[in-house]
Length: 385
Image (cartoon, rainbow, N blue to C red; front, side):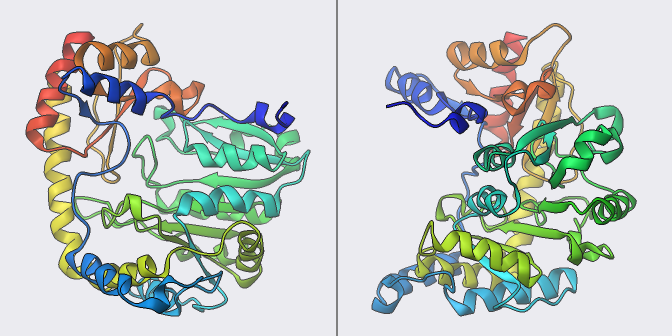
């Protein structure tokens, strides 16, 4: 059967093929060090695990959650937004529980993009931005993220004809894959430009709590005027080591939330309420869990910067995320290098080109292993440069 034409517009999935190759190497006895996906080898908060065990024995938790989900989860999210950012949101009207932020980001495009509309997408960038917009039938306009500009997407770089047709702008700071952070004045002028051009600002804030050295990433809603044009996405995945649990949320004005909720009502019947209950426990254990977890990530970050710099990679110490965006020596293409590194040395890094053509010249490394394993991976990687 012939697939729909929209499938031709989907970008390649950046992790395609890596799990199968990794499995084959492991079957041959190769010592594989996987620093590819942002998927830490650390445990979730103990209180979350305990609550999941309790919820699993509660018959009511196994019923459909539907779009409403567990109201206690909505309340906990609202409390987090208030405590962390000093922002008030109505738990029922301005928060949407998600099966991970990824599905919400992708589905939202259906509600705001028609064929012929333009979606403005950062490159390199997270695949659901382009994937969701492509499935909605929109035209994709990629804006290169340049080191010389701090990896900031500037709307002034978008051609006027594209800007006139644009309906949605995707932003992600702290940024995956570059680990860049956005100054407040940048966010202020971007929000203002979105208001001028009636752009929906889709702000992916999955790494808001994974920050170091005193840096505290803001919510986009701390910027005046953002509530009129923005929707912000958060995730339990990175902050609480709960990647496989698939739980997150969107926060926005009631109209945007209603649109996303309506789309989801035709796609899913909500995340398992036991996981939502466990997420409540995780959010409530923020003060006892997150600082210690960040200490582990900071130690890994520092070890990674030291080891990969010594191995010949260009490394900048990031203030946030779980990634190093490392430059390769001139003339070393990222995809062949990453393939060679995997097959010859058993080390998984993501080539920059997997995040789009403008990611060429870089590789992304996740700080998801112990300092000792990171040092071993850096030594092996240096042999392949």
